[in-house]
Image (cartoon, rainbow, N blue to C red):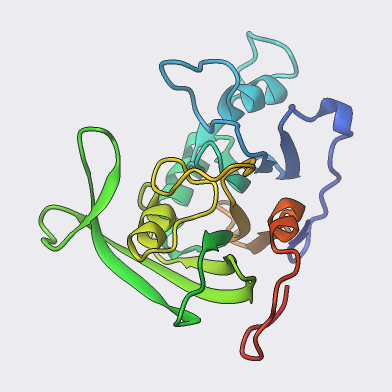
Length: 247
């Protein structure tokens, strides 16, 4: 994984100082960028309070001092069972700027889905709403849902699965998972919107790239990670059509 930036260089802290389940990609006085493992919540729920990215990173910036005024601020969230990049702010001004500009930043994901898509590239568009069971679904009435757009491109195929590169054009809850499931190509390992498959260890959804504008310096920063090895292990024996670029 790596970061592209214009000037300042960042030296990552030794692994022994990094919170468990999180790899710190970049940090300065305004922002903190981490790579989250699958299975770790971004923020707490009624059932899980302590083992979250938010709590772990608050402890990290406080250096073990509970009375420290240092803290982090939520900018966006990543599904518990997804992995990849998350940006946190280290002050309220940075949080406000990043949230206001978030829709203009570029977000790229890798996802493994069941089946072979006939159209290798396109945009899925719908209005997403949430039911009482906290599941998202598409509606035709724009007054009942929020406009959602998911760009996709097939980059590799196997007899069972397709590996997609996702351009998240809007950022609704569970958007990628819902759009692909409703098209008939659920994300592998998605127990909420897909089907249970024996032997699948995790949700195969990864936040691979984020391009943001720094809230203070206004530099354009791009952070990237590679496709998880587990995704590729499920693609063994894949056939790569001519029109599809291999990973």
